[in-house]
Image 1 (cartoon, rainbow, N blue to C red):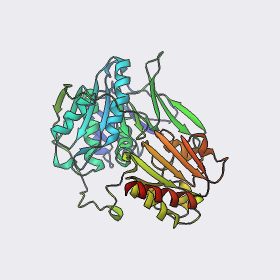
Image 2 (image 1 turned 180 degrees about the vertical axis):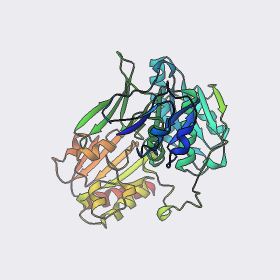
Image 3 (image 1 turned 135 degrees about the vertical axis):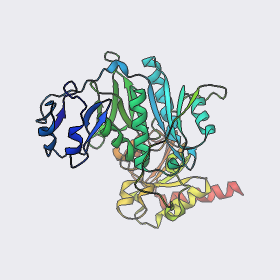
Image 4 (image 1 turned 135 degrees about the horizontal axis):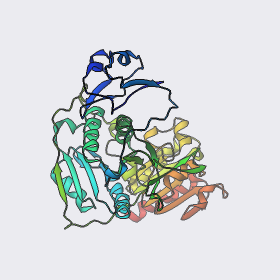
Length: 397
């Protein structure tokens, strides 16, 4: 059961607000509305003099008065860390540009924090407008001010589509935004398309362990919201002379019940980001022993790469989760991906198969990894890697 308020009957007398012990009723445009804090205590029903409040079953049809024609433009959330735009923002601009062109609408970026130079970079990568909220409250990520600001902007400007990266930040506050504005959200999308018949956003993502690709629509509510896996979309065209509009956003009235005192790098690895790496050397169960990662690290350091792993190696406790590549780890798209002792389960392939060059080293000639590899070496990695390391050292003098 749930409580609903008939906007046509509501007179805006505010009698229901004081009757609610949970603060679940608020005024919007002169009308009372129910927010997410409602516990269906029913105390508001009897105090409403206009009879505008009632209780309905969850299955009862109650559709908000939403005119979809009022919603336009494609928005992307431009995540920033330490004042620098995250790479996923430029990937979102790439797919966002395609969607906006199909919908014949503007492509807008939303940036919290950072400076105007970073906002200008978003325009050069394809944004027509940048809504820039510059305030110290955004310097360190916090769910509350981020979600409050995004909700405020969406309610004021009414975008048709809102995209964000499926990163720790995007996964944290974007669901809160979707819940508060009561629209749908598809997480971890790997493809986005416009339905040529309805004009709705087709949000495509793997399901059931990657065994099927599900296409999800949100036809009756706006905006249509999705988070997109990093490194699955290609960046658009960079134009150093491209111009656009940077719109300063007022940040007054934002509240925050918590404060970030400091950020601590785990093992000093803040600078190591698998999703931004151009060379990745990964190890899997075929290493047979955690000491095998010593060879992996040595090779990675020699060629300027970073260390990755399969889920099996993480589950064995050989290496921390932050190195995991795959459906339940990081999606990567480096120039070179070297898979050592990784058989190539579909969940791992989902996370790395878009790499430019894939080099597989495995003693099993029938390992599935060879089906996607650009180059394959059938052999014992404990024989192959030392020889490879030796040759690279000789080449470097």
